[in-house]
Length: 533
Image (cartoon, rainbow, N blue to C red; front, side, top):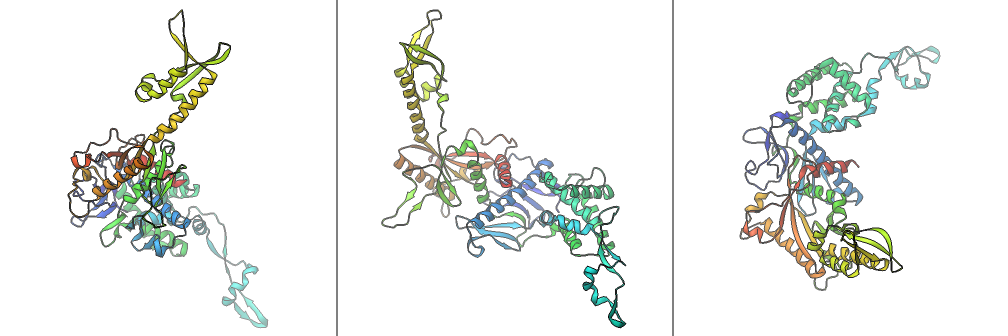
């Protein structure tokens, strides 16, 4: 295992060399030979001097990668996609797969230091190793056939068996030290992963036994000041156990190898110096964004189209799909695939008016009515005001001089239906088209439409403008576009930075696309929780 207090943090465009390198994870610098933790884009405000913040984020990235891989595997299993055609291919470096854009994504999963411990926890093996095997002069006749090969054969077809190996549950002062050592590491990892509630009471007891026997009360495996000392003690303990343990069965080696991988796992890296991480973070960023949007009421209620698993999915019933493409006389239909299309937030009737007491006027039933937020109605919804004035009745209170408005029951129903139709129309009259971009502000500030060769920003702008154009032509709606890019804020309640980024680039600003910074922490916390469901 590596010392988190002794790695370099790469977080700014300058540290990245202003490159388009989209790797996130751990790798070794070829020049300095030091481990580097490459953070996602937009992490300029991340306090890399705060050890607990760095440690917490490292373990969250571990959970994020695990969540993404599990979601990818679940999807491929549900679609019965074969590994040799389009699936996740496991090799000695980790995993690789082809994403929806036909690009290879490689996950360097050589974090054996954690994986071996987490995957190595086995209640049955722990129980097996704690149950001692004793040689006994007692004879279990139901198992005598297993000992015929070591019996002494006497005259008259008599056999003699001296002793048997019989499993006995006996009281021992302590469990095997290798179990204590393993469970201590396992518990410490689970604490950092915020998964302590998932460990068994027995594992916690074994971990505590090890700590009492070998460590100081304040010892912590992932503490800033205690890591090196604690790891040294664990290594010495493991070597001592290996020397003194006479009987080593499969269960013993199972836990020994897991502990060894954790304590000496830093030695393993691939031929590029990459230790652990994703070669391209684009796919994970898009999956994090889409998972959040499609599972939170604020956005789920507004979403009308979404790119789900590589296909454009209508989330409401539409008679005309503006993204449908038919080419000449070809029968096959293709679709444009924006990441997300949002309608305006739908208002409720209660956002416009409220009614109070029932009254009778002209021998007819009526209701007192008053408008909610008159200045907003006057500025944004004048048609509602016009309809209100058309249908209302009014009378003046002689004592106060104030005007009292009411509507007869029939007119109130007309007003209610008018607003319902108005809300429906209004929500579809202005649409926002969102594309998730794993890019930094610098990519847009340096953008030039005249750049030779690959020009990703130019291609993205052109696609976005096509999305807007086809909606305007088919649905006669006003549109705007947003690119969602990552940034870091330690405030978990902050979803996006307001106002949108002001890009210092005339060429980009001509597109009128908003560059919106989305809080990575908010998405990450939600993504991990969704992975646990």
